[in-house]
Image (cartoon, rainbow, N blue to C red; front, side, top):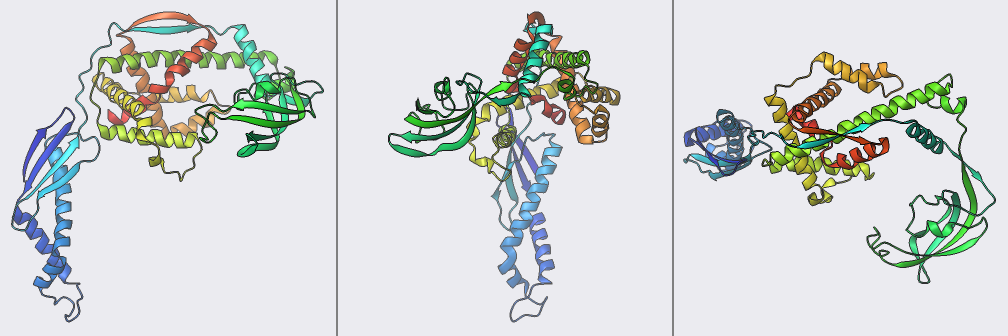
Length: 450
């Protein structure tokens, strides 16, 4: 077998392979001879069909089968011998495939890029310094009260934040439009769940009152026939309910796992949870800045095959997020919506894998166990969570990947200039969430790619 490899780009290789004709022809002849033993044709006994007939009837198909197998086998041998690291599947095409002639084929493939990491030295990273204050805790308790509030009917005009029960029907001109009506619908004024301008016009309405609301559908409204259209809604207000917040007493506290109803313990638990969230927010904020700097300093080529794999994964996530169902064909979603994010994720995954490799980072069993125990504290029965994680190899590998990511970020952070910035609890959470979209889960692939 003769092999030559051409470098057509930083991440593309073209392998040309030549296999002696005798090797292919002998394999085809042997397979035809073996097949002839079981062939049944009218006018011939089983096993007595002349080889000329066998060759004429089955020769092409058998040769294609043999050639396909040989090309796959020789491709694997070639990439092994040439120390190539394919990213995805190759395109294999035979250029000479005739009896009596050497088989010649070409395999075009993408390979993982060779990465020489550039330092992120000089990068300024802002690290939030967050203190959870009594006011933050009071606000969180108030949020919990609202989440557990009841709705009580009131005899007054509707106010912002009230829940109104309404019947409504929408019209374009004098004609009602499909999907524009409902009966007994509960709507919280100010929730933003209806068309802009609809909810605001219900402020001041009273139970039993009929109202006529005029609104304009947004230009980008999902139903194209309604986008930008002016509409009228005839609304009947059935009832008005105000939010009744629960008292902060033992019964309320017990709902959150504080069995003895102790208010001080409840407040301590909330403080611990908020401090943990603040710590995670700070960590995420720092991580995103570091990863962005790493990507900017190392503009490596990214194999299209890996981008497509990541794009397909993002499509599946989107389908789940929007409840499109398990049977939904994600290929209907355009690649363009996800390609940029997919490329960024793959690029960061490749770079982090190199950081882990170059610095010989690893995670011991003790480190994995400690991380699992830390994660388990977020659950009501942490012992069961620890047991589940440590008895499941897949979950352990996920935790190991998270630890390696943290270590890689720490290595990179040591190259940067860190500036502490005071930030409120709410601002820290908002900043981390804002930055979290692009590079979230990028490093989950690092362990596989390392």
